[in-house]
Length: 200
Image (cartoon, rainbow, N blue to C red; front, side, top):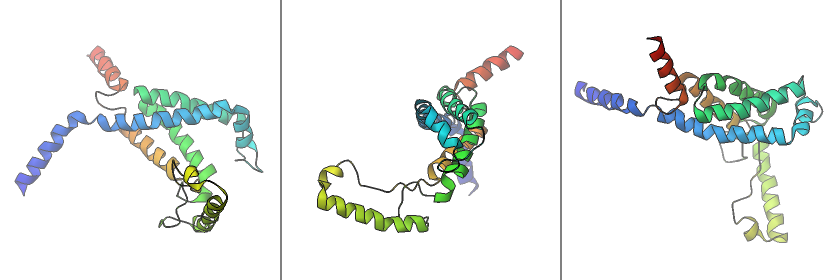
C-alpha cells in the first residue's frame, strides 16, 4: 500500500506542471458568457435600467441606473480580465457579487433547473406542471405546423430560469478567486514573477 501511495503522489506531483490548465479552461469558458451578458445589457441599456428598478414587473432594485452601469462594467471588463488572466482574483469579486444578485433577485423563486425537466429529481412543482404545458404546445405544433422543420435543430423546451447557470458560474468564480489565473497560462503569473524578480 505505501508503494501505491508513493506512486500516486509522484503522478500528482508531476501533474502540477499543468496546474494552470484548469483555471485557463474556466476563464475561457466564463469570458464569452460574461461578455455576452454585459453586451446585452449595454445594447438594451434603458430597458435594463427599467427592469432593475421597476418593482411591478422588474427586480425593484434601488439605484437602478448605478447598478446597471456597475453590472455592465463588471461583466465586460471582468470578462476581458479573465480572458487575459490579469487581476483574476480581483476581477472575480464583482462578478461573484453579480452572480449572487442574479441568483437571489432573479432566479431563486424558480428553483434550481434552468430548463424545465419534469423527470429531474430537482424538479419543483412549477417544473412538474410545465410538462403538461409543453406537451400541449407540442401537440398544437404537430397539428398546425411543420413539426419536423420546427424541431430540426433541437427539441422544444420550457425555460424554467432557475439558479442552475448563475450558481455554476458563481462556483467557477470562487474557484478562480482561490486559484488565481493559473500557472504559465495567465498574465498574473508573469506579472508576479517580474515583480518578485524586481524585489530580489
